[in-house]
Length: 233
Image 1 (tube, rainbow, N blue to C red):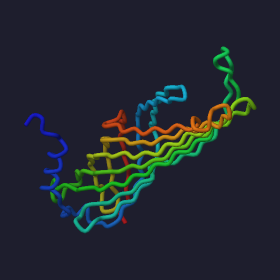
Image 2 (cartoon, helix red, strand yellow):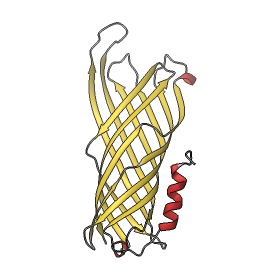
Image 3 (cartoon, rainbow, N blue to C red):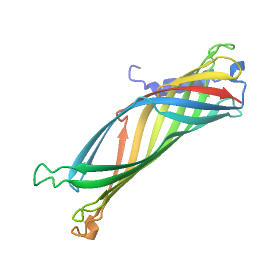
Image 4 (cartoon, rainbow, N blue to C red):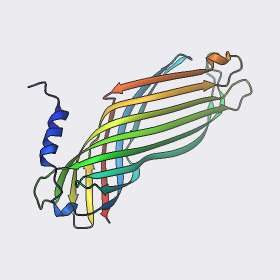
């Protein structure tokens, strides 16, 4: 019994307590604005010659979401989790013959969306506090294009497409029949990613210019917390 997984226990608990009788849940559609703080560590090994470890920390990031009720009193929710378009010009100063330096322009884009199915649990029939459990899928796409300005250097394109799966314990507080707050800490169960790197270097054989990599990570180093304000329609 000590090794009984937590997830099946949660599923049984919510299967027994799912209810839509709480009057605070008596609405069909809600719109939300989330702020999420995230800390993530990712690493990559490229056969074209480098290892990359990235640590991302975001304290303030806003994202809109909309939810609607199912016939069983639970909710579907979709969110535009992230959308970024960046263009940066950088200059590298040579420090040795191994690092030739130069000027380049980095263009990057990132888009991420989330779909979640939320089970509402019965705590008290009239309670303003409503616990729930969600199951989410989060597809994302990232593109980086590095364009050196020196004629002896060549552009590089790095595309990544991935899908993450989350188990999402939640609790919401309903101020009145219009406003509510939502707090949750998503647990990332898996992160699958397909990456493709392409170098436009004519000195490299055509077949070796492109590198693809597919990775699956269970319980990756991704930690986040979100708080949102919602309006019932």
